[in-house]
Length: 160
Image 1 (cartoon, rainbow, N blue to C red):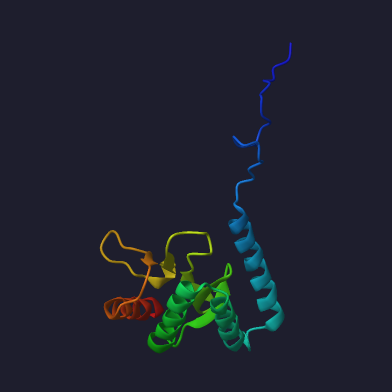
Image 2 (image 1 turned 180 degrees about the vertical axis):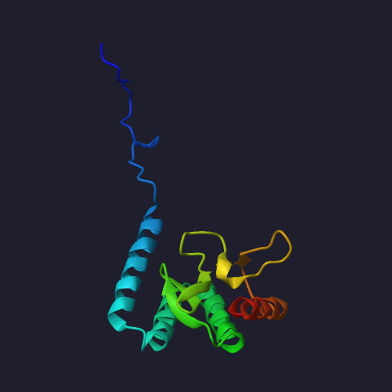
């Protein structure tokens, strides 16, 4: 007698019979973009990283939909103005800003993972600590003057 079970569907498949491998197509695409970024960075060397990073970020922003592009362009200007020490770079195909080569903050467009809003995110290096609980990402649908002021303060704090 065999100790195996039979099933109407094969293991690893969803209800529709499609195989699920753990990552969505968008997530796999982001990982491929990250691998390409690492390869490109290694080929360039550190000398031109900031200049090339600026061009890469601007190219990613240019690919975005109108609403996301407007948000990303404004955020890019805020970072340049309030944290000039952060180096622009792409990270998983998203505009990001790094200190000593490590990402401090990033912009995720709504179209990136087909979400209903764009996101401004911060890594733990941003040290936005405030008590025992604090936000590390912010949903963005538009930028008011008050929003821009808050973002400028967060970016300056994150840059150290």
